[in-house]
View 1: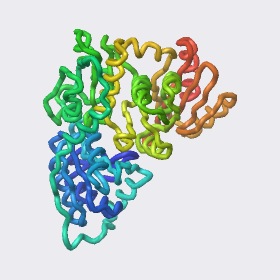
View 2 (view 1 turned 60 degrees about the vertical axis):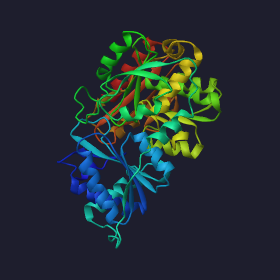
View 3 (view 1 turned 90 degrees about the vertical axis):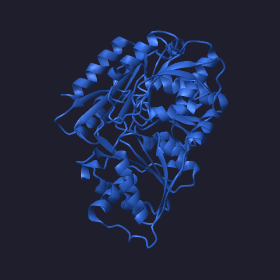
Length: 440
């Protein structure tokens, strides 16, 4: 059971690592730790999300807290509900892009402030394991149902600036993007793939980072008539994009485009994760924004956004964070931003992206290592001591014509490399050079 408590959420295989009894204990531990009185609870479409909800709600209410049940919802909708319904906390029941046998919980305090491993998940784990719950309440809490979709749709629509009609293709992967996209009704039109809710994910993994899952979307878009294509992950807090030609757009470049849309309305700070292309920083500056680099991971990014009152942030994994959605993800707002840009520019998405593809990137390369990853980072520091170094997350080193970041996995003996250069030949040479040092 202890293995289900992760750095950013609670996640395990239902019926094995994660059971209804554990969900009940998590409900009790959550209220004990947070001290909340009202908890928004949402769930994805997986069949076992229902018994997990019942067990979790029983644990929460036995501790005296009330549950606002918003039913089947996307993770962005759960954050929105947390912020707008006056709740002290929220829990989203989902395993995101994981296979169908998995499930889990995403935990937040008030105003959709995430609870991570270092800010509470490990405390919840301790309470679950040692049973140090607060006493059960003499009067249990209640469970009330609330539908937030209409309010969420009105919220998203506030940011529409679509001129000419925009028609897109969307791969819902049978997941919660089906609900998330309803916030876009009347703002743009679409043809869908796998629009039937099915928590067994019978067609393909609901993960736009896996490029194989985008192939059917690419084929559909290439048949013509679409401004772009979108693929949601299982709980719709991530989105991947392809242009009108069906070509995959890296998610850091989508960050740059959304930043341009956000900054057209008002100026301010925009965060981009440290794996992002130089082109992202340059695009934010050109749009009149203040670019700031963030760590990898939603809890870190949201904290940095709050500290700097940032308007927007984008992560290479396809998370797009909006101050106007309680500094949390909204895939609907991300899609709308791209529609705004395409509609207003009168240019195809491929033409808007082309100027941003000015550098050669390695992509993220994972290396399994047998020696201590910390020793590898020390060697990296020594070997590249003449570059401009930043240690926001792992080691980043920047030179005039190339840069790289090396990070260690928190959970396994993996070292991750991202590298970019001004030419493809330089990128390949430096990639191989750094990889040789990592894998030595």
